[in-house]
Structures are given as structure tokens and as C-alpha cells.
Image (cartoon, rainbow, N blue to C red; front, side, top):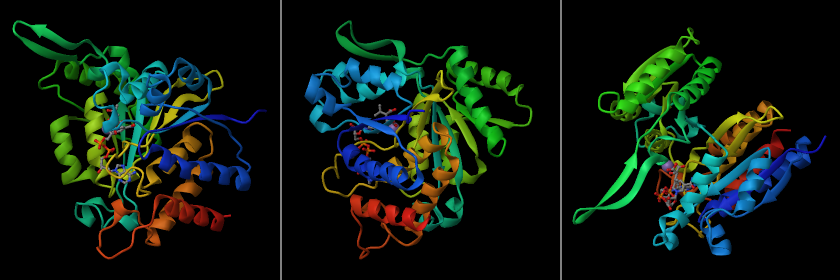
Length: 367
Ligand code: NAD
Ligand code: IPM
Ligand code: MN
């Protein structure tokens, strides 16, 4: 049987820096655990624009459709601010999500014990936190029509449309209920049914789907209250289901419960392919961090944890994913910190590659 295939798209800014550490981790699993991948690398975002004049070439898009999983670093940066909207780096990422039909974006937020002191919230609010945000990823206001900037009388109007079909809501809801069944059987759905028709439909469809999952305790919350509850008492949640835009915002908010945006991985999953694996792209929640790019300061953990999610969700290697997560936990417990994780002044931060070194040593010690 041939090796599973991985397409790596490092992207821009800190994307290539954190992805370099993931490559070393992938090589470690090849050398030490017999997990060989056929890895290819390509361009996305500003890097692709610089090479081809487009944020994603048709060839790269076709490759992404063929592989078993895509790993993406991050896209974007100030260099591309003035580009035409259709050429912006972010359009490359959105095209991948849309054309691969990756409708279910899993964004786990876990607070590692060693970082509980470091969150901007009090330790007892976040210690032991383990929640999963399921963000609908291929529809909503990100893709709804009409959209654009139009002339209207003597001024311009900017338009985006929040649009959800019942089937789009249903498939995202099912993936959240399935996850809830494998976790603590508790699901909170967030929308704004008080002011948006799409929210009313969302709530109705989620209620309908819940009939197939009678064991799951379902609740609904307006998303603004949800944001407040996430920082007030985040441990009341287990799985949160929400739409594309609210999910974007709520997951950045959840990131700070874990200590840093540099800690949050994600899995963007679609329907099963012929081989039974879901269409999948794994991407950290953070962006290209232009403020620290090129300085070796980036925390590679979000991207490495995204590879752990690939091991778990695409390659049926749950135990190896556990091994990788345990290695990261050990390194954090030993006090190894990139700059974003430093609470105390005077503690020396490690560089991106030194964090990679420490995780590799912990992996070595695990076998
Ligand atoms: P950002 O996530 O890039 O950065 C926000 C802040 O978090 C910055 O201070 C940054 O230094 C810090 N940060 C982020 N990741 C970090 C890491 N791994 N280690 C240490 N610190 C980290 O968000 P932004 O500044 O709003 O956006 C910058 C660019 O990235 C924009 O072009 C945006 O569109 C893009 N972006 C891309 C993605 C993606 O590719 N998935 C996600 C978010 C933003
Ligand atoms: C994310 C990012 C993206 C989004 C951008 C870069 C398109 O913020 O993945 O969280 O808004 O979905
Ligand atoms: Mn975001």
C-alpha cells in the first residue's frame, strides 16, 4: 500500500517558520514510528501571488483535492494590503476551504496545566479547560451573495450577505453532535436568532437534528452572550456549534483562555473521500503574525498540534497524536516558553526552532 499523502502549504509570514518545525516532527514519526508520508510542498497566499500572480494556482488547488490531507501555515501580510480583493492572500485560503467543501472546522481550546497561570483570566477559571468549537466554514456571510462595493446615489455601499441553507446548517450540526457523542454529550449552539432570520433557521434545524441524538444535552445561546460566557465561565461548555463569522471571532477569544493564539490548532473537515478519510485541511487558528515574522519568535505549537489533529482525524493514529500532545505538555511543564507564553519578565524565551528541538527531545524520550 502506498504511503498517505500530505500537501504542505506554508504560506506567508510566520507560516514557513512554524511549518519548518512541523516538517521535523513529521520526519521524526517516519524515522521512529514507521509512519511514512509522501510529503509535497507548494505555495499559497502572498507567496503564491508573488510566484504566479494569484493567491492559489489551479494546479495547487487540484493537488489539494487529490491528497489525503493538506497542512496550511498562515497567509497574509501588509505587503498585500493594496491588492485587488480577488488577489488577496486570504482568498487563496478561502478558495481551498470552499472548493474542498470543508464545512466543519474543529477548533479545540485546551488549557495545558503549565499555562493555567499565564492566561489573562484567573487560574481557576481556565485550569483544566477542554472545549471544542465547531465552526461552519464554507458558507454564511463569508460567501453569501450579493456581495461587493456598489454605487448607490452619490455614495458607495459595501454589502455582504449572511445566508445559510437548511442542508448547510444540518451537516455542520451533525458533525457537532457526532463530536459531542464522543465527548461529554453536551452541545451549545450559538447564533443571533433574536435579530437574524438565518439565526432563527439555524436554531430550528439544530433542534431538528437533535432528535437523532437524544443523549446529547443541547442548549442555545445568543452569540454575544456566548462571547461573554466564554470569558466569564468557559468550563460550562464542552462542544460549541456556531456559524462561520461568529466561529472566527469566538475561537480567537477562546485562544486567550489557553494562554496564546500560538497554541490553537484546527481541523477543517469535509465529507468522506473514496478511501473513507474525510477531505481535510489542518491549519493553526493564528495568522501570519507580521509583527514577529522573520525573527524566529513564533510559537510553532498551534501548527504542530494541527498535525496531531491530522494524525487523529485523517490517519487513524490516535495514539501517536496522544504521544505528540503529551510531548508538548511535557515541554511546557518543563518551563520551555516562546515569547508569547512568557508571564514573567526576566525569563528567557526560546526561539521557534528551540521549541521544536525541545518537542523532538520529549518525543525521543517517549519511545
Ligand atoms: P495574527 O493571528 O497573525 O496575529 C495576532 C497577534 O498574535 C499578533 O500579535 C501575533 O504576533 C500573535 N501571534 C499569532 N500567532 C502567533 C504565534 N504562532 N506565535 C506567537 N505569536 C503569535 O492576526 P492579525 O495580525 O490580525 O493578521 C495578520 C495577517 O494574518 C492578516 O493578513 C490576516 O488576514 C492573516 N490571517 C491569516 C490566518 C490564516 O492564514 N489562517 C488567520 C488569521 C489571520
Ligand atoms: C481564520 C482566519 C481566516 C478567517 C482569514 C485569514 C480568511 O481569520 O482562519 O481564523 O477569517 O476565516
Ligand atoms: Mn480568524
